[in-house]
Length: 318
Image (tube, rainbow, N blue to C red):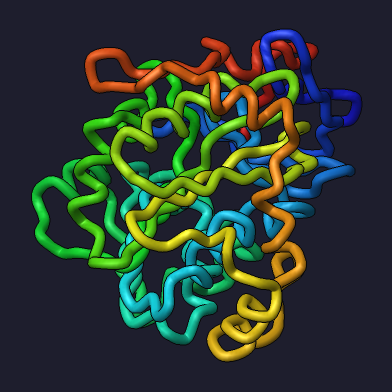
């Protein structure tokens, strides 16, 4: 495979390229294309529908930033719902918290989860076998709509809303209203909100505008994820708790009591800086008008053939 390159579109006009050492797996599930590749720079990478979802070298940045700010903001999170998160790393981070008695992970794509179990052991680190975890393979929206269970924290670790993809209707106003009904009093929700950079902020702004029609308190934030080639957005939503008011000392005390050691990205100092968005992004959020609905879902840009740009054609897996 020497000399082959994987081209990951950061936006319509910007592509990040990675030299590929080995293709460990290449195929399609019922819902999306799935590729697991080995690169010199990022190590092993999970690629869904032509987009890098996480890489061995920096997945800790994304997953710690997604999970711990919302978990620490809750006074005592015991029950957690995860939509998506097929690699198992989000579940891994949730289960670090000793307060958690039950974590339900619902990912519709059982094939991605099975491949992650086999090829991405450093992501899940045995989280799927934890007695507190329940892993289900069905539509997350249907699970919340049909069930009556309420949770302290909801975490939406979903792929981008690609047309005909499995997550397109998990970013809408109607879905967020349903999610709010499944929160316990004082509960919080966090969603990965797409790119949040000077170049591409359409999804981030629309998700925040949509969440604002359902929740009275929003805390958008972003971190730079090298494998994504840009800053990536997240949003915490709640009715009563504002994570931005937690001090570094508050965060450190909660982490010490609940998690202990082992985090590589997130701590109290990082928490205080997460919510300090730059002026241009605050301006875009203030100007946002697009509300995502079931009738008018937001569709991110995606290549019809995610590996068509590889030299010499799409490589075969094994």
